Length: 195
Image (cartoon, rainbow, N blue to C red; front, side, top):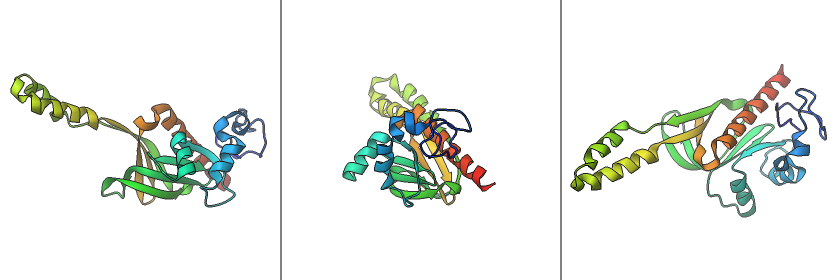
């Protein structure tokens, strides 16, 4: 099992992590309970993988029960990152929204982070200029709405061969940041093991 705080591998059933001293995530966090780990286990390629974290738990539970998915989900195990649903995918040339089922090895993840997209300012400026005469308001309002819709915060995962981006507004910034930290901790744990 892995520590929910530092991400290092600890002995199964441990109450405290010997590396950071935190209480064991398996003992204290409902999402990492044995039932949750068993439920997610059927997603994993290798039976020795352990569930670490997921992004979009409610969507994941829906996917496991019905195999239908509303939004994108990501499941982090001790060895791999599993991606399901519609998300932004890039092969270093084209970026598009695609429905994806993909498995990425933790060692292949080259970076993670957040991208804050600001829309083209010309739409807002032109919308404000056109708003004053009543006749042009029909054009101005759609331009301003388009400007506001284009503002996005995305959580990005770069891996050998491409990039995946999640819309942070679906999950919230806190859940996205926690998932980001867990990926980094698992990567650090794997690097420490290989030293």
